[in-house]
Image (cartoon, rainbow, N blue to C red):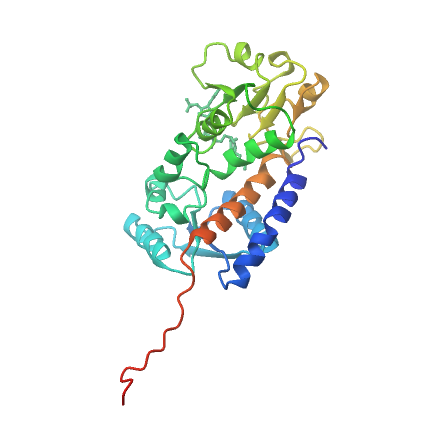
Length: 299
Ligand code: NAP
């Protein structure tokens, strides 16, 4: 399969394995803590994916749960305790939060050096300087898929559809850092097809099935489909299935190379979360030596 996310995720895991070996040898096991407030069936699948990913990468994964009626101050206090804990090397706040809590505001309480989802202003700001240390995982995954296609990114016409803070904007900055001529389309773009037809590289992150149809692209375009949409399954009445934002079969028939949904960006996003957790662990202070100095050495 072209632009196979599962295969790329496995390759990334193999590339980072020696680094994990080194950290484990030094007694610095990367530890990722996910903080969840209340229960949310929509996040269950993400949590399962994170846990499975962490196990495969030999990262310790802990899910901390606060009650659904926790106050903003309680969530903030929990994040601050995780920030202060030397054994925690990565933190993520599972979104969405219950409606009374401001998710984006609370994410800002995560210490930037443990912000493995790359959502704090410090880590997003680093992207403007061309540094992609702890960048948002889905944006990193989109770039990794483009790079795995072996298409030239330098000088390419790159079009990003969607400009959210965690996907569209960081993808655009990562493309600029790789010298692509980059444009960003959004809800108010007057003629989306005029832009997408000029793309060599197209990243679509909107959340609307069938937004990109074959008439909107040229043959040969490399397309990363970030969208996740649950739609009725035409083959099994009463059941649903997950599709992306592009007409996958139509674009492939037109001669484009397209990342599938599921099986494209998703597994690589989990791999990038693990990659970020390892980078954060590498920069965390080494474990403190037990210092046993006698209190009264001369006695
Ligand atoms: P988001 O915050 O809702 O952002 C969607 C973006 O699309 C916004 O910038 C919006 O513009 C723009 N938009 C809306 N309608 C448009 C249109 N007709 N034409 C062009 N742009 C339009 O969503 P997100 O978090 O970036 O996620 C986007 C999609 O990716 C979702 O389906 C999400 O589930 C999926 N996703 C997948 C992964 C993964 O691991 N595979 C991870 C994250 C997200 P305005 O802001 O102007 O409304």
